[in-house]
Length: 494
Image (tube, rainbow, N blue to C red; front, side):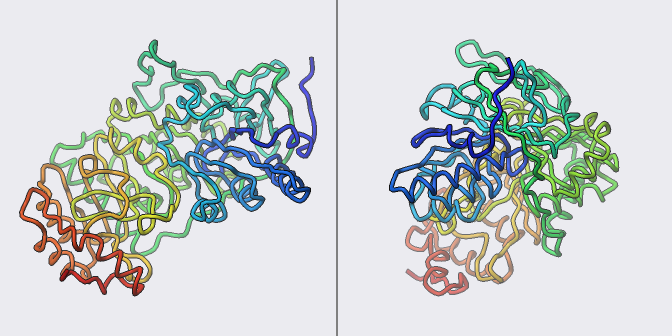
């Protein structure tokens, strides 16, 4: 029996008002595009006719504009999880038009299988190949694809010929067994394979939509003086840790978050001859990792997506056999699995939106109330890492915002999990330090000089207890910015 085939418009009309939809991909990588855009157009038609149309959204992580952007603009989303980065989606969430619940990425697939968030009615999966017996081969982002394919009543496969069928073999696709019969994951090394090279799906559930569209990825901003200095500080810290015997001479697998700082750090590691060739066990494989694979500085990279620029993707596809020997793409519940993170001794590096002087980190909410993106995978790695590091420039908005404040306006990572903080000014090693000692290390080593006197004054004004907090002025930096547009105007005399 041949698989059903139809246009993107026809496939979109299979989705009904109130359905919950699971999407493939992780970041823009591996995300379907034509069917979500057709779904947004269908929603607009329904609204114009006076009929309600909204869906619930489950994704691996963030997506491209064709999903989050198009559906948000069409006012077609009722709820959204677990992570987003698109401006239109963010605005709708902060306007309370969309119910968004932030979630650790590693937990969503199993939460869906447990039924915590209701059914998954439809899955939309980007694939480079699909066989008549129901073998779906994803493209360059996996996320929660196997789980939503298993749970959905209908699986719409967006068969994208921009991606070569020869991608088959780069994936390791499986699901974690559910309790009470869950065993260990079987992964004891970065290169271990435990699953299939495809997602098996009942062919009767599959609808195929043929497309040819490039990824929506764009390159990251070039390394600037600040991100370059942060990268150098990380490399210098690692070399010192190796000399002290706290990092093995053979080094440990690394995880790095998404963005310009992560690329700058990886570039600094590649340039430092004192750091050995290494392995990567992460969620997002970026352009800098591809450069390090080519140079030999990275020996192997495991992740959930190839989140690279399109020129970089062209480079990968031009030499695909080389990269298939050195890259493995997994589901999120394996790429971000805390058990595996702890077992492999991963060094985790993630970006802080802000940190307070005691080491608590806010990754998600601007001024406490406006969501930026979400916690993503940072929590998955931070708590279980061999060494958890947070990176941030010391200031933002031309110096009017300090990344270091008396108390974070929202807490994603508590002081107990944050071991090291690094800015362009230096390194604050928080291991084995009391709250006051942590504050002193952060102020002296990471804070911009303009803000050090204010934070010292706050510290000295704190209550005489284990953690010297002054509740009267704990949010004085945030208050000053909201009232005057500049944290320099913080008042600490209340």
